[in-house]
Length: 73
Image 1: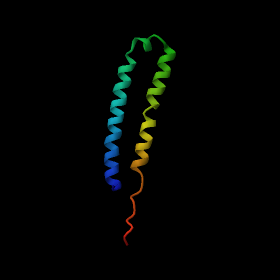
Image 2: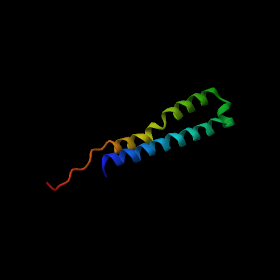
Image 3: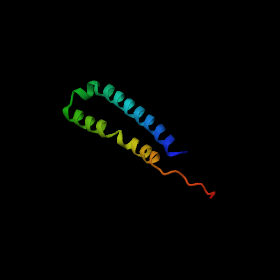
Image 4: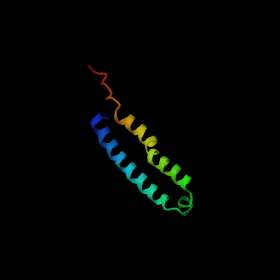
């Protein structure tokens, strides 16, 4: 697959990931058990804020992979 197509697919994938991640984070942040503890809130917001990076890293690595060279010359 050409790098341009991978970058297009990866960009759409990253946008979907960030949107879904933020919506899930907002939904979980409304939970009563989370509102009861400031420590739980702090941990949750750190994990929710940085957690999307882990699933995004393999996608970005795949997007930036160089094109495979043709064996025919």
